[in-house]
Amino acid sequence: MDSGGHYNPRTVEEVFRDFKGRRSGMIKALTTDVEEFYQQCDPEKENLCLYGFPNEQWEVNLPAEEVPPELPEPALGINFARDGMQEKDWLSLVAVHSDAWLQSVAFYFGARFGFDKADRKRLFTMINDLPTIFEVVTGSAMKQAKEKSSDRNSSKSKSGSKRGSESVKYVKQEVKEEEVLDEEEDEEHGETLCGACGENYASDEFWICCDICEKWFHGKCVKITPARAEHIKHYKCPSCSNKRAKP
Image 1 (cartoon, rainbow, N blue to C red):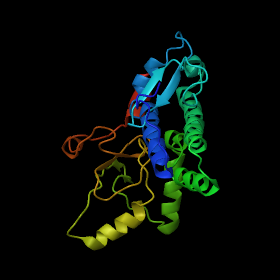
Image 2 (cartoon, rainbow, N blue to C red):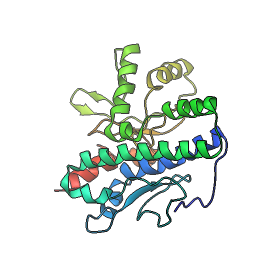
Image 3 (cartoon, helix red, strand yellow):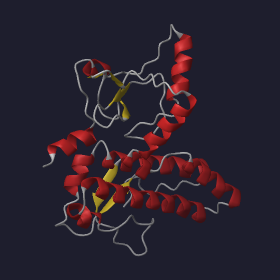
Image 4 (cartoon, helix red, strand yellow):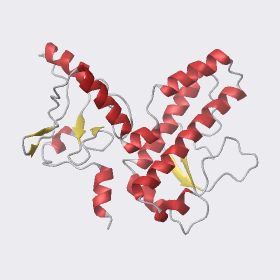
């Protein structure tokens, strides 16, 4: 079932890399690719599962036919609950099950290749340092980051925040000629996480803030370039755009 073929990570670092790839793919399905994911989860179809792959891709498909499966299987029948819940609640439910599946796959590899207590602890610590899919999808990871940032600096100076009645979009880029400003910005935004991939802020990357949910995103994650951003007065992320489009 795994598009990565028969790839079997054998070290803690390899298992963690496998975990991160699968996690990134599933986050894409539930954020930047949410409209496509929603359409594929047709309740009229049979039991469907959301799979994440090591190459950061995702897939909605039927469960593996072999018994027992080569890898632990994701939650069955995610499509059946789609129309019986609010979309936000349904996506949160899928996110929780996805987190559980990622953990099971990672520790399946750990058991299969004989990780000892120290290896298992190190693997869990590496995994635990990343926000869960649920935290990324619900925005709680962003809230936690903002709380940490506000503890360090009560005056929020993000240019992407509202200034008076005007919403100002800010693209975070490195200002090489002003190193002092760089240091202050890095300290303030160091805990900011991308609303799509969940990775930390980096000053040399292009970022954009949604004017609706106020989450920050890597430009590459939402397919927005600096040139294109200059012509967008009010940016709406894929999730917010999708919500507005649905009746």
